[in-house]
Length: 578
Image (cartoon, rainbow, N blue to C red):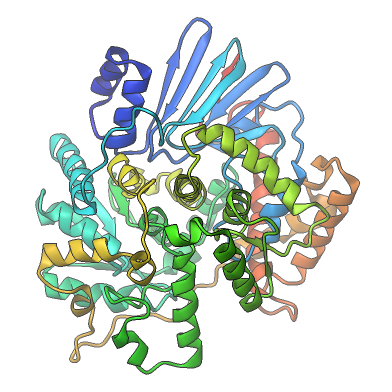
């Protein structure tokens, strides 16, 4: 945390609640949750960097926990919630994780998000709200450079006070580079262990990480995914899947087979989401604009030219120009939908279309073409109503609405799926962008047209300020050095192959928990289709099938563990409020 636990508690006791929350929204660093237990009132406050948890209210009791299985184990009879379940299994093509920010696939189980306050009185949930935007909001940092300096300063102070070292996931991208450089200014470089992962993304990874490290004089440890083939790693991942909703493709899972000591693993992911940059665009443009003359004249294939153009338009959708012009929203959404036949424009541009689009595809005014037997607009509107109450009256401007949606969709869900579980020897992931200084700098900050052409100008500028060099020069490959690149992927199907019987409808625990017969028939059909499309050697194998089977297994493992736990999951403890 940014301060000692006792100091944080003392500050909470000394200040009014509004003063305390304003301070945490502006200054908090770390993944923590505070619980204040009184005679009748129980209050839960989560940090901006909290990985997220769950809350259940029903049958005369309330339960809150960080791990989903601890909440499920306290529910007398688990029922599935039709729309969130279908949304989770369908795999919306451009949504971050096909998960809603407030609702879960389990009825009456809501998320306990970061930067939030939940209050219970006599076992009833009486209040829940986000404190990212409040009337007493403190002035944000004056620049991104000031924000990252504050975050790394607080981290370095904590590590030095505790006599600890730390580690960094270095993708070769500008976000993780800025984190490393800023941290290195404040603590000894030998106390920062740097890893880069082999992965298929040729934009970031070893091909960029090693040239930058050589030019800046620091060592990188290259980690392959080979350890994930070992049975011990497969067992660890299954254990994670039985306790929470997990993204088993997260790169840092490659560290499961490696003991790096009880360290934080700092991560640069989510910087883009908070800066409101289209997350689907490869960052090949560096500090030059998407449509700069240099980039326009550079040789490129038609596919690359189309990616550049659509990337520019995708970022344009997060600008003030777009948010304030309903006609522009309609025309842009129509154009995007024509490029991607799996999407369609929202029928009602403006605030409603912005919210539904961000929930459905992570793009304002763009919806997934859903095949499930439910009204997508109705389901998204239900979630939007919950979300609007949660963010409160202060998220009234289109800019604020979009920013907090990005924080509570991509950022929160990515953080949840990567930061819930410690890796062996107690190492735990910490998302640097999910901090008070960086969130308070970006949330609500106007984005002009230049942000669409130069989406990360400030971050590239900070890297240049810290190194004296352009980022493009830092990552340029050395002519005399063979790029350390691995293109061969790891077979990620070992867990799937050993557990396909869970996807047989007759063995499912999910299907009997679906009350609506139409939805149950639809999900059962998904199960059957997935059985034929989830393994590479099967003729109908598709990327969607391979992704969906892991989602199905995740739900099945969760329900199996919850039914066996009878109140408390192994290795974790639920907190029942009665």
